[in-house]
Image 1 (tube, rainbow, N blue to C red):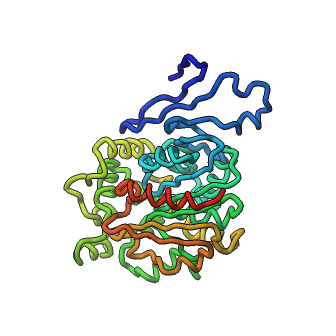
Image 2 (tube, one colour):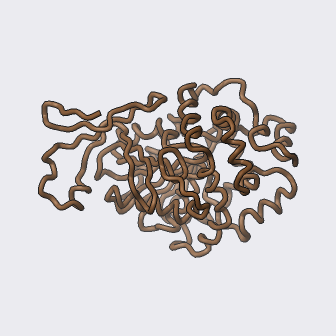
Image 3 (cartoon, rainbow, N blue to C red):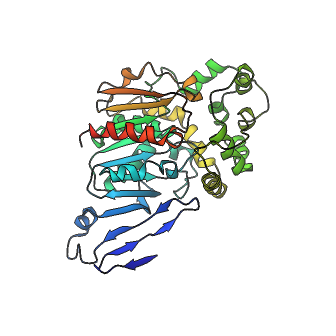
Length: 368
C-alpha cells in the first residue's frame, strides 16, 4: 500500500501480520534527499513511525527485518532464538522505538522470510555474527546494542568477541555468557549424557528432527511454546533423558491449553511460517556447535568489555544444564544478572513488562 498525505510525505509498507501485529510506515519526503550521493542518501535519518518490514541483502543472504524508530538514533538489534522469528520481539520493538532507539529485528538466516542456505556450514557463528555486522552497515551504524534470546543470545554474546568494534552493549535472555569449553561441545555432551537422550545431540543428525518437527508445525509450536518449562517431578525429568526411539516433542509436557501470554492467533502466526519454511535451517544452527568451537578458538577479542546484562527465568529448563556462575570469566566489563521468579524460557513474550523495564534501564546507561 502506498499513499501521500497533504504535506507531501509518502507512507509505505502499511500492512498487518497474520496475527494482527501492525508493521507500518516509513515517512520519506519525496524531495528530502534529491541531488545527494547515493551513499549519503542511504544514511539520512528517516522516521519509522511503526514497525515496518523490509528485505535487506547482507553477507550473502537476504534477511527479512522488522524496523522501527529514527534512522540515525542509537541502534538496538534484537536477535531471536529457536524456533522463533523477529515476531517474538513484538512486545519490545515499539517500546524501544518510542524510547528513542532505532530497532532492527531480523528473521535470522534459516528462519521466516530470510534466506535458508542449504549448506550446514552457512550457519556457523562467523556467518551469524557477520549478518548482524552487515545489518549495521546497512543502517549506517558503527556500533549497536545487541540483544539476543536463546540461540540469539549466543549470537549476541559472541558479537563483542568476533566484532568488538561494532558493539556498544550486549544483553542475553535465557542463555548466559558461557566461556569456551576445553573440548568440542558435542564431545562434552556425549560424555555427560552418555546413552541418555539430549535434544542437542538428537538435533545433530540431519533428517530425524527435521521430519519430526515439520510433521505437524502447529503441534510443534504449541508444545514448544506452551510446554517448555522446568520438568514437574522426577517422572517428567526422566522422560527427557530416557534412551529410546522417542523423539523430542513427545518427551515434553503436553500442554492442555495455551499460556495466558500466547493467543491462538499468535500461535497460528508461528505455525504458518514454519509450515511454509520447515525447520531445517533453524536446526542447522545446532549442527555448527563444534564448528563454532573451532572458530571461537581465535576470536578478535578474548573477553567482553562493554556493559552486559543477562536475564533468565527461574522456571526455564535451559538453566538446568547452562551454568550462570562462570559469566565473569568471559565478561570483564560491567555485568548484571537478573532472574525473574516463575518465568519460563520464552521470557520476552511471557514477561514483556519486566523485560522492557530491564532493557530500557540497561540501555539508558550505555554509550554509543
